[in-house]
Image (cartoon, rainbow over all chains, first blue to last red; front, side, top):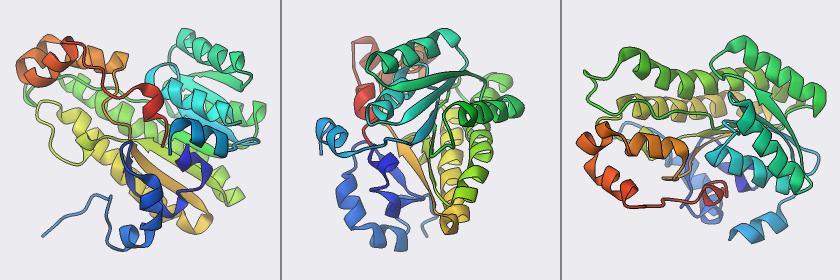
Length: 44
Length: 237
């Protein structure tokens, strides 16, 4: 519902789990996007 | 934020949503949640009987809904379903790509190739075709959201469920790609892991003889009544 409402738009492109704290994730959205957290990435 | 608080605060009045796999389980719960927040909902699935139940549940609560009997892997059927939604309800603001299947449990070299591919096809091609049909209208309006049901199975190997894991990894990347391609057009795309929800699909997967052999922990959990995440909880994000 939060995803549908637009309140989590800053997290576009992310994989979000039912147990995630979305409000906390939105507050950290810049870091999450910049560091490519919640995405599929190759770690080396 | 709990579910009740979310419902009170979120107003989707005037919005139109399509929910694939909306005839039962998580999709049905999502359709009901969206309708309860005021969205007009088009529920898409293969089973007309199941869709009728979803529509009845929503209308029984005073919401607005329509049934879209369709197979998400059929391009022309999907395109017609989206056109019919827009004709009856209006431009689509939200697409929830929830339709999916679990595939056959077993070693990759022993599962039936057609069944393996069908699992990937429903999960990936279905999400791709629905997004492909809806996104051009969203781009024209510079507004829209797409939610694609994924899974933790898409983030790491899931032995003996290779088709499901590969399909979910692919749709997670699909969400990332679509988000990057449409960010400048005001569209937001999310991959959503709803958790382990005890649905009919879940039971058919994990109560099988193959699950008993290859996934004994899951088989025992489900056969002993493990409930997983309630569908309505899975619909909350």
